[in-house]
Length: 191
Image (cartoon, rainbow, N blue to C red; front, top):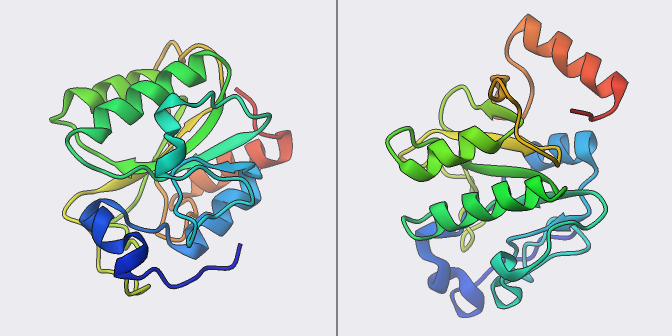
């Protein structure tokens, strides 16, 4: 989708520091792997998929089983983190396939709920620089670490998630990670 500049009038101020855009090269790498059919937390000016939900559509009230992988970069706040992680975990148990970009927060209860439900966790090496929604400029990074969380749909894994460290461009950082990435890509995305 073509990106437009977001202005203070069309949402930049309303979202403040909670609404940061996904870096385009990271989204491209993830989209090439998963073929997203829906952007669950978008603004009209920055939707990453042809089909998307805005704040007015309320992703928390929607059925996420949409016939393919859903991408979600939810607004990170004390209120929304537990609500979105519970929603994604519940939707995945019902069969939704979800890839979410979000914070790593080991001291928060919501993060442990997320970790217990996710199939794969791909933490970034170093802090990910999100795109400022008003200026369109990539920032040096938020004051927290980030990861990509993947649910393939169905019950959570018995032994916990597979962990695969990623570079800020969405590429595995270890030889074992690259081998796993190539193998799973060749096999198709499966549990």
